[in-house]
Each structure stands twice: as C-alpha cells, then as structure tokens.
Length: 314
Image (tube, rainbow, N blue to C red; front, top):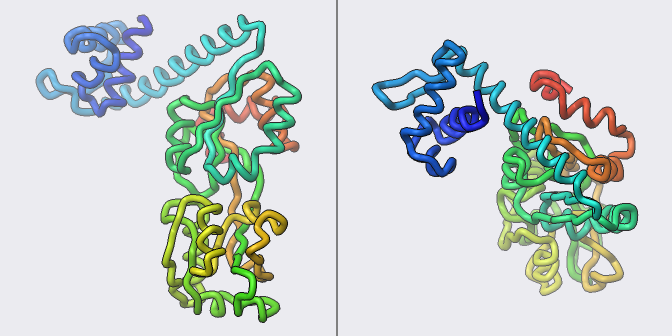
C-alpha cells in the first residue's frame, strides 16, 4: 500500500468516478490510475468500486468506509508535511484566512494589529471573497481559517466555533423624513426605496425575512456587495440604506444618519471555520482565541480531531 494508490482512489471519488479527470489531476495515465486502484483492492481483499466494464460507477459498501479512512490518512499526511515545514522555518510560518470584504475592513483590523504585534514573523494571507466560496476554501484546505455566517451550509468536515454576532444599521441622508420619527418601523421604512446587499450576500436573507414577517415587500432599487457602495448611493438621496453595523462611523459618514430602530432585523452570528483534521500551529490557535477568548488550545484541537459525528453534534 502506498500514497499513490490512496490518492488514485481519492481523486477517482472527487472526480465523480471519472478516471480520465483523475489521471489529469495526478499527472498520470488513465491506465496507471486504474492499475493503482486495482492493486489496492487486491491488497485489501475487497472491491472499493462497483464497475460496469472498465468504468467505475459507484462505491461499494466497504468502499464507503475505506474512502473515509483514505481521506483521513491523506489529511494527516498533509498536516504532517505542513508541521515539519513550519518547524524547519526559523522566521515563523504562514497563516491563511478567508473572509468577506466587510469582515476584513471592519471586523478584523484590531485583531490583525494585535496578531502582528504578537507574531511579527508570521506571514498572514487574506482571501476576500463570498461566504459560499469561503466554505469551499476551508473544506479544500486552501486556507487555514474562514469566517462563516451561521446557517450557511458546509461540509461535516468543517468545524465551526462561534465568534461574534452583528446586526444591521439603517441609514438615511441628512434631512430625510424618517428622521422625524423616534423609532421608525419596517412599515415606515418600506415606504421608501431600499439600497442594500446583493442576493447571496451575508445578511440579505435576514433583511428579506424581516420584511416578509411583517407582510411587506421592500422596494430594493440598488443592491451591492459592499456597505461603502451602499452608503455612497444613500448619500446621493437615492434611498434608505441597510448596511452592516460596523460599517457606519458617524464621524466619517457625516452625510448620513443611522435611524434608531428596535432590532427590526435578526442578528447574524459569524463563526471561525476550520477543516477537520487540520494541524494548527500555536500562532493560529492564538488568532482563534483572540476572536473567541473562551476557547482553549486543547478544546480547539479536541474538536478538530473528533470524529464527524462528535463534531456535528457539538
């Protein structure tokens, strides 16, 4: 048994049993990949795949169990290589983090400043992208950590730790009629054009749900992926803006005013996401703890090393 055989099985499954695609990823011929799979099956004494002729069509019953074991072995191998590479470095290491633009701009600066002060030798890479892509980057191991909103579907191989909750701010230009009301309701706000997040962005579902629960249909005339863009159009008088709370600064956004509302939109909880089985250096654990102080290094490692059923139940 060798890693080439394990990778052949792993890639065949990832490529939906297409040996041609698996061979391209492995930089090998299709016949070589097929032979490696057969050799492993012969050594184990069971068929991992059901076949139709030479074509793989699905996993056998023992194949499902074997596939999970192979995935764990390959993840452990990757963690072992990473650990040894990092410890050989005298100048520190690397930490990769995926987050949305809003998180990077408004939530992370203080965390990153403290991290840089504590670990100046560590190189930090930030991937700014959409929430669904963050989940994929974490699952594939392309990043060490990701910031995910709760409720976003993700693989059972991804472990999450609740970090913080946030809500929305509703902003209008100076002199807007809504400022005459002490606590404008959603009914009041729905009378005006709305400028808010694009569909699929964090918070958009909660915004629509809040209006829907009141039997209202907001007139969303402009949608964007960034709170700053939303604020720009609100300042031009085009509509009422619904943005992330952290993105509003009364001193910087002096052309806008935040309405006083009574929690009309449900808060959103963001979690730190990590691929199960990932090896984390002490500086990565410290980064997590800076966002979730109640966590200990041991509790983080225990969750990451726990079987899938224990992780998902936690």
